[in-house]
Image (cartoon, rainbow, N blue to C red):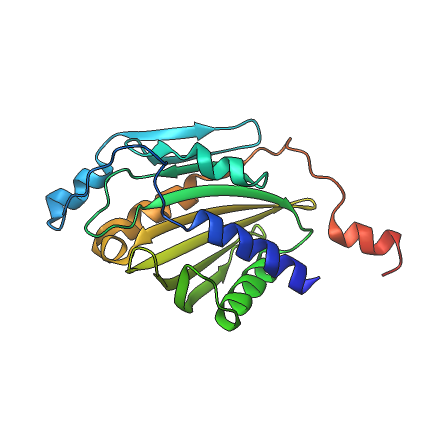
Length: 215
């Protein structure tokens, strides 16, 4: 079970943390290093992504990456900043939903352990920074790795929200220089804004499944 959870979570991470732009879309690479320029990354233009099962806020200048969504049924939305902060990594956010029957801690441990021991083509020098359980059964995993295609160090924040047998994962990936310069505040706001509709389908919880089948 642990291997299955880890493999699915790593698949989500490798797809969602790619920092790629939409094919064919023109983007401009800008250097934004002062406090005012960092504020420009977010500005006051904050939007809310609304789905029937979840919602969250994000920087209003970010655009959808429909190509990534088409690659996996698990990824429900993918948004990215079309203007790299200083390097060539496109800061991004994704929401993935999978029927894993896992707790937040189980998903976080399986993901970090698998990435620490396995070689992924786009991920190098992976390290787990922290993990924190929340009182409501959710959890936040913060990791750092070297994004090989862009040659940039990035910070990945994953917010795991179990909902019955489904696991919702909000994945936010920022270039490390932006994260360390104030971007962590935006990440925190995005995590705090994430909400799963209580009426979203739950299915049967993994604990109930084990009881039913005497596992």
